[in-house]
Image (cartoon, rainbow, N blue to C red; front, side):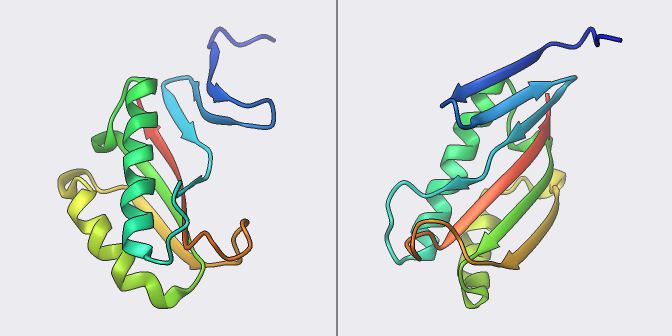
Length: 120
């Protein structure tokens, strides 16, 4: 049976869509910093700005976040990442969140990657 919910793919490259909207939910692909600085705070700020832009393109915002998964190249960057996160997140509407250390694509240049899901 075909669903009556449309699927909207935003910023699709052919390999992936940066965001997919379906049934009132926005699913973001993994977001990494555009500048490959070794400064995790700067990379985190860039990732969060990109998330804001993707959510806006989909018609929602960070107050509607449901879940965020964060991958850090080095878990030692946890406090520096959180310092930026804490200034960005809507504390009254904080999402469920997981943070893990992981090898990231980009030959070590990526310090942080985030993937988010939000309601419309």
